[in-house]
Image (cartoon, rainbow, N blue to C red; front, side, top):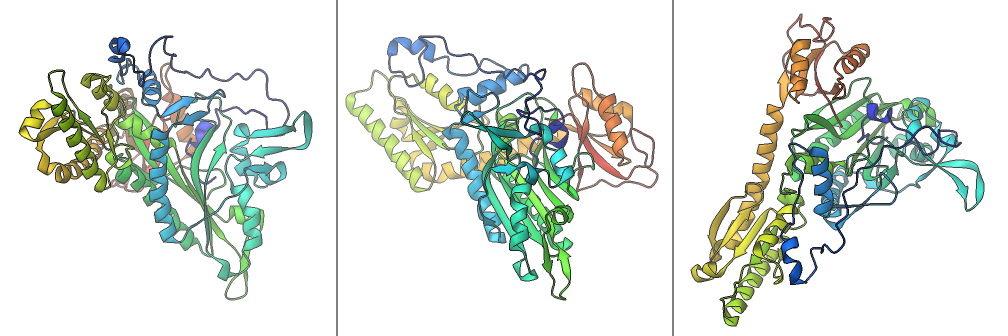
Length: 548
């Protein structure tokens, strides 16, 4: 696949709607019950209700769950109450509301521009895969067999042959690469798709993090040489890292997956890994795979080289999904709701005029005009601005409403501000306020947005670094896991050890730890260093942890 945003080991725990041969699913396999938020009581009014008699209820806008003590409930409340998703009738499928889709569009615009500059072109291939195509690469299909959803009927009639819905597009695209590539002049062939894929998982569906259908991009490339292919793998990995660091203010660690964790059929897999301090878990953020020549052998993708010899192409696949949004929420959110990085916030500034009952009609009109003026000035700078002039809600309710949605800056304009020709800028990330003269709003707000973006990254980086421990013994490894930390430890780089660590580190309360990656930036490994788990000679430092 282009990327495995869910993780190779996670796939092994999943079931399928229809098994690989398209026959009926195992009746004993039951889906995990999906946790949905409680519906509002009948009569409770939505945010847009204008009836003032409901004002008391409406001031309760916000979250009831704590991120620190009830993370799962907190996350469910955040994504629904902040209007990012709505639950759909099919378990594990979600509606992305405009606030969430805007974040995805921001990522899409940025990343699409970067890969186009590099020479990648966009295309689209069908979502359906024949069973014959899907089975073309044995190791590859075995990695997805449990997740494949099958179409077996057309109306009331059974299909002659079941058709799979793509879990990824290697087997869809590569037969056509074999047709299109004939000569070295046809290379490189670098295509990307923006699409959805389906993986029929039953294991703990979670909005953005684990779903049966998700949005992503998947790139598929073919090159004449191994060096070109490997160069692109790390070029794309750097772009994935920048999606997190530059747009979402989330630090990540770049690394290679172990042999046991790499993408099925790949020569090697690279990854960006993030950390969620509230749960102490790592989370895979995106993967870029060097497929080597495995798929080109299976699909006959060869070319005539300059010396007239026949050569197999070297291939890559790489992908990034809407999991990015979930990572951002988990890292930055707090008990008031979302905390949005300015660069991907649908609304960057909300302006809230605060008239009171004592103001004259003329004074209220002047305040409204000044608020409008601020909105116009900031929008002229290219900022995304909302003006909340609703008069049926209290200022406190509005503050909670916009804090829940994570808007980076709130501009408050009250009667005293009108007298002083100033306003108040309130930061969502720190909740601090500062007065600003009207004449400085247009210059100060963009600077403050940049400050917030940088501060959010630095805060997340400090929390991430504090959550990684470097150890050399099993005892210290277990203690670090108990503290909900990731662990950097010397490892003999053997799959049997990794399996043993996962088994030995599992507890009644927590899953076992696995390798998240072999960081590209390696600490010094003195000769004779022993593996923390086996006592054998260590070959590298590996990042371990419990993960999503």
